[in-house]
Each structure stands twice: as C-alpha cells, then as structure tokens.
Image (cartoon, rainbow, N blue to C red; front, top):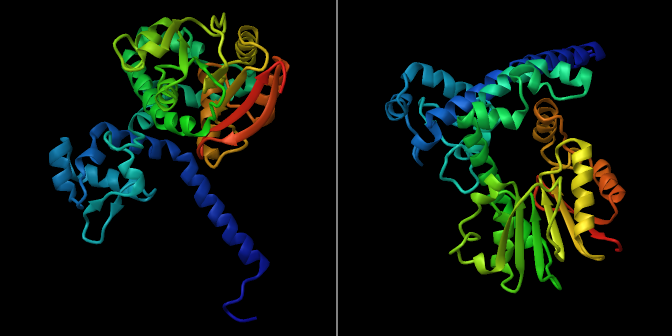
Length: 352
C-alpha cells in the first residue's frame, strides 16, 4: 500500500473528525447569531461603503473599540458575512450588504427580529415545547407571546413590525407577477398586514377592487396608498377584524399569506370562514413557506421550531396544508413557487 492510499478506518476517522468539528460549530451557533445581531445593532454594514475599510475607520464611525470590532468581524468573515482582506481591511460580501438598512433586499430587521432578547430565554427550553407539544412562552413570561410583545416589549414589537413590513414589501411584487387575475374584479387580502400585496395587485390591475382584512391596529397602519387620500384608496376597502372569527367580504379571489402558522384549529376556522364568505368558484390562494419544499430548509425549520415555542404554531408541509384546505371545503389545484422561499397553493371554493 502506498503512503497516499487511505484505508476504510482512515476514511471513517476523517469523517468522524469532520462531524465532530461541525457539531462543535453547531453548539456554538448562538455565537454566530449574536455576532450577526451585534453587527446589525452597531450598524457596521451601513458604515462600510463600497471600498474596504480598516477596523479603526469602522470603529470611529460606529462608536466601538477597534480591537473587539476586529474580533467580531473576523468571526463573521468565517461565515461569509464580510470579507477580511490580506491587508487586514474588511470588505462587503453579498450577505453583509443585506445587513444594510438601505439595500432593496435588506435582512437587517429580520436579523434583529430572530435574535430579539426573548429568543435567548426561549431557545434553551425547546425540549419542554417538544416534550409537551405546546408553546412554552407563557411559562417564561406569564402571558401569551403577542400580549407580551405589545404590553412589555414595545421595542421588540417595533422590530417585529419592521421585519414583517420589509419581508412583505420584498415578496409583494413577486406575488403580483405570479397571479393571473383574468376574470377577477375583486380581491380580498386576508390577514394581509399593511396591505403591500393588495397594493401591488391594485397597481398592476387598474380594473380590480380590493379589501384588506386584519386586526384594527394593523389596518390603521395600512400602506398609505390604500388609506384615505392615497392613489389606490378609491378601489380599496380597509376592514378591521379577526379572520378567525369572521370574514365579512365577498370576493372573486382571496389571498392568505403567511398567517396559517398558528394552531391547526385557528387555521381550520380561518379557512372555513373563507369558504363561508366566498361564492362557489371563487379562487383562494394560500401563500406559505413549506417546510418540506424549500431551498432554505435550515431557516424554515428553525422558524418552525420558533413558532412551536412562542405561539404553539408551525410551518406546514405541502401535505399538511393542502389537507387542511381540503378539509375546509376547498378544491386544491396546483402548487407553484412564488420565489425561492414561498409557494402559492391555488384552490377554489365549491368546484375546481
């Protein structure tokens, strides 16, 4: 045997060593998340321009000590967030640019939202949520998740609102480009937040009227284009309400995006309410991150576990979601990708 040949035991040993190294990295995953959060809070990505900069230069802009900042950026560079050059200066990468607030595909607020202070209290108790099959948030904070956010963590609630706003804006145009509104005169955006999807559809289809249904506080902050005086207001209705209780609007198409993530009974009620509100043949498009059909499996499964802990919800598989839709009385048709992270499940009320 030559010195360059490997035996099965050598190969096994190498694989074992790689596995051990990877597992060590995983158990230190909190350090990576904390480093991304620190960079976002410090504004390092915003401070770094198109040209590479030294840590001294960056530290002067963000108000930090140069040596610890170098340690932070060195850690992030090992994950591809920023690039350390041979001369010691740091430059942007595709990922670090997404931490800037001003970039069109910014993930600045998503990065902050996924690492908010409450997450560090909840994650160590994931085993309890798995053991009991329910959210553990009330055990930690004495109240349900959204009550806590709005009552006791208003700064975190603002981060949540900004993260959802940025995410919705980024996907709204993708959805408007995907959906064929031939023969559609009215659209209802159910639980549609500030109405970015509805606004994108109304802008693209000037013959269509639309309704936005969400909780009163949410609708009050709807996209200015939809509110009184906005350019789309004559064709838009803002409806305060809870889709789990009632959907008081008849439309040719209902859009339900990223809200069927709570417990199954709430999802069933929402879907049944849509069926009750719509006329036979009305189209219902459910848009979600599918946990078993995504190019971002690690992110989606992590969100699935977070939903288990904080609200007792879940990200769906294709079968689980289409099963709930069928159970509610929807005739499910094709499933089409919206973008690399979202899928649209097309269905109709009463008949295909």
